[in-house]
Every structure is written in C-alpha cells, then in structure tokens.
Amino acid sequence: MKKPIQIILSLVLLASAFSIPSTSTAATKTMKVHYINVGQGDATYIKMPGGEDVLIDGGRQGQGDEVIAYLKKQKVDDIEILISTHPDADHLGGLDEVLKAYKVESVYAPKVSHTTDAFENFLKAVKAEKLTIKTAKAGVKLSLRGVTAKFVGPTKEFGKSDLNNWSAVLHVTYDKNKFLFAGDAEKASETDMVKAKQTLQADVLKVGHHGAKTSSNTDFLKVVKPKYAVISVGKNAYGHPTTDVLNRFKTAKATIYRTDQKGNIVFTSTGTKITIATNK
Picture 1 (tube, rainbow, N blue to C red):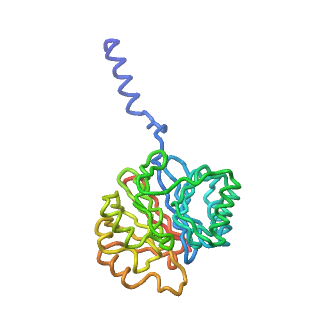
Picture 2 (picture 1 turned 60 degrees about the vertical axis):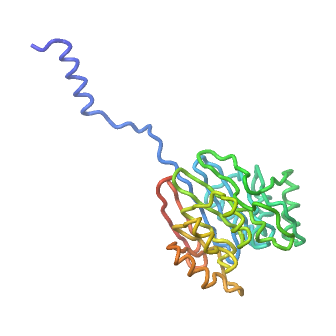
Picture 3 (picture 1 turned 120 degrees about the vertical axis):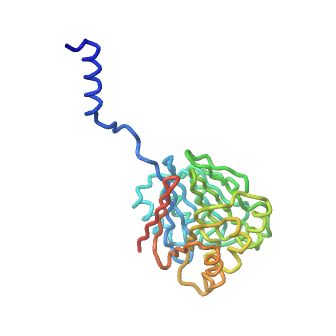
C-alpha cells in the first residue's frame, strides 16, 4: 500500500500531465507603419506598440478627407502626436482638416514658416485647437511607450528658401527593428546628420523627397543601411523617383516599395520581425 505522501505526489504529477496551458499571456504587441497612398505627397500613420497614434504629414491641400477616411478605417479615435515635416503643401496640405476632425494632443514642426495658403491654414487649425507647435529638431525625443522615438534632423537651421532641408527627420526604434522617416531632406541635411553622428541606421527608410536625385545620397545610405525603401510618389513632372536614386538603392541592396505601384503599404513589426502588406 502506498504511503499518503506518495499518493499526493502521484496526484500532483497526474494533474500536471493534464493541465491546460495558461491563456493569460498577452499577445505580442506590434507596431504598424502605414505609408498612405496620397499620390505625389507624403502621409504616414503609425500605430505604436503602446497604443499611441502618430501621423507624419497629411498629403496635399484638399486631401485631408482621404487621410481622415484612411485613419477611420484603422479605427483611430484620436491622435497623440501629429508631425508636419516641413511647410511644403504636398506634406501639410491636408493637416488642417485632420486637426478639425480629430483631437490632437501634440503638434511638432520645424521652426520655419512659409507664405502659402496651405501653411496659413495649418497654423489657423493649430490655433483653433488651442495647441502650441513644439519644435521638431535633432535631439528632441517623443514620449511614447515601448519605443525610442527622436528627431535626428534638422541638426541646424537653413535659409527660408531651403524648405526641404528643414525637414523633421524622425528615427523610431522598436526593440531590434528601426524605422527612419526622412521627409524631403536633401544632401545638405543628410550630410549634417551623418557628420553629427545621429542615429540613422534603419531597416525601413521612408525615402526623402519622393525619390528626387538630390536626396538619398550614397554616403547617407551607407550609414542608414536600409533593407527596405518606401517611396511615397504619384504622377509628377519632376521625374520622381529618378533612375539615379533607384540605382543607389539597388547598390545598397534595399527592396523598394512605391505607393504609385503598390498603393497603401503597411509594415508590421513585432520588434524582431517585419512583415509587409500592400493594398491598392
């Protein structure tokens, strides 16, 4: 006859053999980066792993409705951080409508102005929401859970006519995955960022200035080392993206995704793995 302690041990072992795995383990959090197809312009929406919603640029003037419709499809109810990379109308044109449609907590933009209606409308919309624009420049960090997000450009001020190089360039690190959003930054800004030893290496690069030959210079790409290059571009008279730039990415062995060819492009990161989906 088994002793009482042996019986208890046998029952414990039997119970463990038939135990049901715990369901309390939380699913892996993801970061989703949506490069929205707004034609010849820029608009990027990021759902951060901590739950925050970030919007970088809003397409051309009059495209706010398109951006809002896309955000509503993603069930965005408010925007924690809105970033205007620079005053060009194909980047901030739709942001006034976004500001009217959504509660926005913080707005970031470089400290440069412009005389266009699009820029004036943006300023009026910010004021109407009783917000103050925070300066986007190298070294400024964003308060977001689970990621490191900071501006790596511009590292200095440029002339008022050099709007592209004023572009707010954002670097986001989620565990082992890194993303870089280059606005319309051109060679002068790229060179400054490299010289200043900013954190630039990224798995995914939102290509500067829609693939213009003045951006994505070889020395810059050698530091960024992108695996993927996303070009936000539409029908245009500028020749974007240029053959020069496409060849530079080919040399860098980066896979190119273009919104004019693929439509909306969504990168999903678990922090260690990246998957890509496209939707025309």
